[in-house]
Structures are given as structure tokens and as C-alpha cells.
Length: 289
Image 1: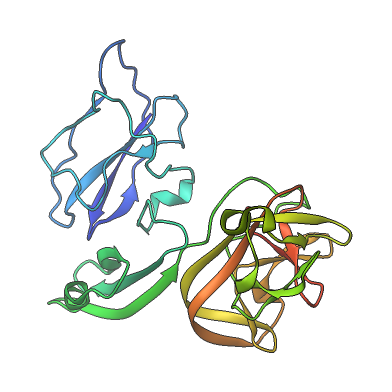
Image 2: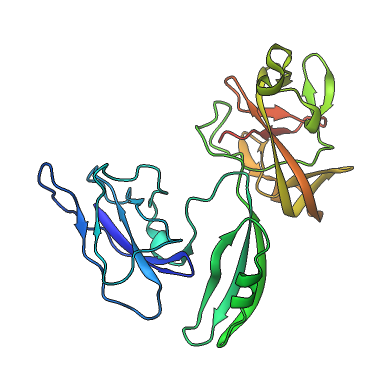
């Protein structure tokens, strides 16, 4: 199965429908270049060899797209199995920056093209300020829309054994206190993990009467809005909490917000219940979701 996507400013802008292609044994897939389009910088192929539409992976990084007029041939080592996977019909719309790293802050310089009536991200995504991208967003016939700061979630993973669905990805400020089995209430920034403390790692309460070992303490820079849970305790809006037998995002737990720039923390818990209890008894999902 294969698709193509046009690239503009190092981002995919629209993805084609899937096409099934039969390749003879000991042969390589070749995709012919689409016709040149002056509104785009090039194109990239998406493909897989499993025969399932909707599971194609990006084969060329949009940062360096294939030039129009240049065909793409599958490498001798076969398909890139690490490229981000296309798996949603709505990905055929909009702009996409793929293969972003987890727990990483990015900056996006948005601009509006007066000629094409579209919003784009000048130069793609950046891990720090970029003067050239900022300048490009205001070039002739473009209106700068400002700088967008985003932070990717801590990680993905398997389903939780503690309830229906849910999700991690959020993080707390350092003041959040966690219920541990031996050390009592411990600030999340001071929790001991197997990764750093070995056998001296903390065992934390996951659900009433249940406990789990802390595998990792994740730390990353965060710049954005947070939800206030208590004095000095803030959490990202996307973090999930156990409420009434289901998982609810922190954004629905409180109306109080503040802008936070600094280090945010999350935990990875071993055991059946991938969650941990805070000082006030609330149960937060951990990094595995």
C-alpha cells in the first residue's frame, strides 16, 4: 500500500488516498513523482508492505522532501519501519509535522498566506527560537500569526490495568506530593525510581490498598497553561485522573489556570495499576496509557 503527500515549509499538507500495488519477488517499489506544483516544495512517499490500507509509514523526512520530477524507489534495505504511521482518515487534511520526540518542547511560527488563503508553519517545528523562521512568517504576501509553543506528551504505551482506557502524557509541577509506602508524602520531584535508585526505589500507592514500584521519574521543560489542583500544585490540562470509574482530563477538574514555564514531572509505575495517588487522594494516570 502506498500514498503520497505534498510538502510545504517542511510539513505535509494533505495526503492522498491509498493505492494497493503488487510487487514481484526480488523487486523494489517505485513511485513516480506527481506533477510539479509551484505552491509546494516537493513530495514524500508513505508505504508499507503489509497490504493494509491506513498503516503506511512515512518513508522520506519532510524536512528534505523529494523534488518534483524525481521518482522514489524503495531502498535495498526495504521500507523504513520507524517513520510515523498514517492511521487516521482525517490525516488527509491539514498540515502535519511527523516524528516529533516525546517529552520535547517545540516552537512553531504560524503565518497566513494571503495568496493561497491557508495557514502554514514557516520552516516546520523547532526546539528553540529561530530568527529565520520568525522572519519568513512575515515575508511578502504573508501575515505572521505568532509563535506557538507546544510540548509533546511524555510517552505512549499499553492500556492500563486499572480501568477503562485513560491516558498519561500530562505532568505535574514539583510541589505535587505522592503517597509512598515507606516514606510517606514525597514531592514528585524527589520520588526515587528504579532507574536512579535501584533497590531503594519508592513504592507508591496506586489505588486504595494497592502499590507499585516507580520505574522512572520523567522530567521535561514545559511552557504553557496548567490547571491548579491545590496550593502550589499544578498539572497539565491533558493529564488524566480516575473519576467515577473512568478517566477524566485535568482540564475538567478545575477552572483555575496559570501559565507555567519550568520543569514538569511524571512517573512510570510498574505493576497492574499504571497510576499513582496524590496527597489529596486523587489518582492520576502515569506515563503509560
